[in-house]
Image (cartoon, rainbow, N blue to C red; front, side):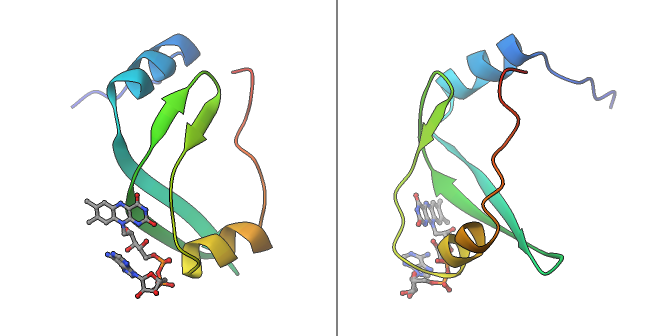
Amino acid sequence: MLIKEMTATQCRQFLVRMDFGRLGCVHDNHPYVVPIYFAYEPDRLYGFSTLGRKIEWMRSSPRRGRRGH
Ligand SMILES: Cc1cc2nc3c(=O)[nH]c(=O)nc-3n(C[C@H](O)[C@H](O)[C@H](O)COP(=O)(O)OP(=O)(O)OC[C@H]3O[C@@H](n4cnc5c(N)ncnc54)[C@H](O)[C@@H]3O)c2cc1C
């Protein structure tokens, strides 16, 4: 399968159609990926979570994704 990089526009069009995905975060070089539901509006993703490992790991390493790409 040939994998091509998606443009920013294609990424946004894809997110409009989606309400489910995988959230990945990292702590001390250990990756952690969990399924979550989300809602998308331009340049924002909204989700719901109770406090747990993924929230604690994201707060301990609060790098944002690239914006404007
Ligand atoms: C189809 C699907 C959709 C999901 N959507 C979401 C979502 O929108 N938001 C979200 O936060 N999680 C969602 N989950 C669960 C998510 O994938 C994680 O397993 C869960 O959030 C625990 O992550 P944590 O790092 O907080 O774990 P932990 O730190 O291990 O757990 C934190 C707290 O969450 C509780 N918990 C752990 N697993 C679950 C679970 N599967 N359901 C309910 N409570 C749990 C624990 O008992 C604990 O109180 C979804 C799972 C599936 C399979």
